Figure 1: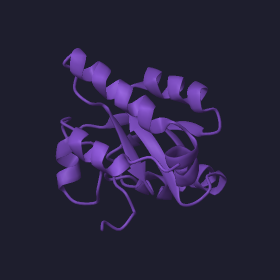
Figure 2: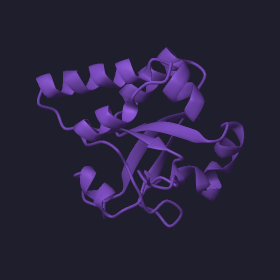
Figure 3: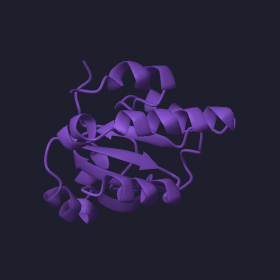
Figure 4: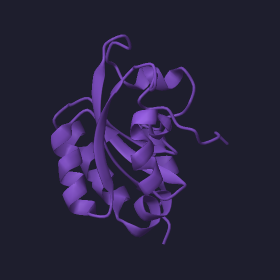
Length: 141
């Protein structure tokens, strides 16, 4: 069963694309170095085999109830995996890949425990190797 992520993520305004608008989704100062935490796996695993849709919807509702700003994003074909320092991670991650990226380390640790068969890590952006931590290599339809 394939989850319907597209409509839900559009309503939540957390779809990430390659345009400059994606930078506006994250309200942090774009010149300030931000630590991002992630879990990455194949798109098939994250989007079809696991109930990630339910997990992220529940997280979104929780944030709404607490009036907390969204600090997590689903990124298909994450560009940060192209960074030389993450080459080993990319080599282990089946393609096409996807990642849940957050500035909340605790949430990503919980996701790793919940999903199990994912790679967990962190990176800082913007940097020379990763100018936009939320960028995607996937062509937009």
